[in-house]
Length: 110
View 1 (cartoon, one colour):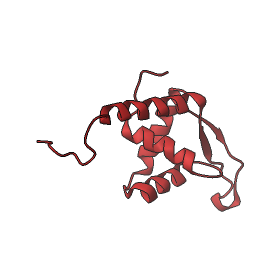
View 2 (spheres, one colour; view 1 turned 180 degrees about the horizontal axis):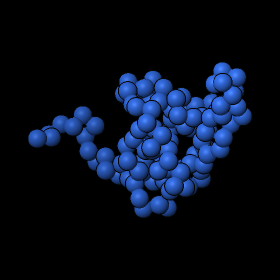
View 3 (tube, rainbow, N blue to C red; view 1 turned 90 degrees about the vertical axis):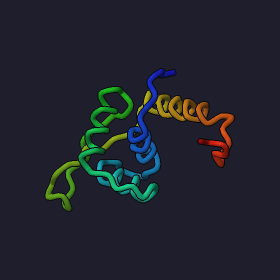
View 4 (cartoon, rainbow, N blue to C red; view 1 turned 90 degrees about the horizontal axis):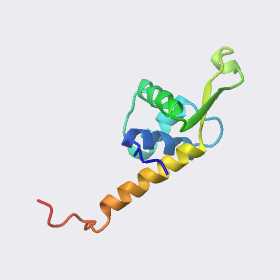
């Protein structure tokens, strides 16, 4: 199991990829994060995160077929790799352990 815990944004990007049906690329990831969290993120931030996640082996990418609506340009599509799933699970388990025993209403917090 990976010891490296993913950052919050990396987790959001990976979860967004898993939530989207069909071809997954930058713009739908941005839209999914906004739809689910209300948080507006820059396209560039997602592309930087995807590049970093791919370098770490957590996502794989490929070029789609060119589409007429994009003037014949292909898209770089991504999917979460098995290593990415393991890292995502490990990150969630780490946060669950941090929350364990803490009052969900956070009573008594100074």
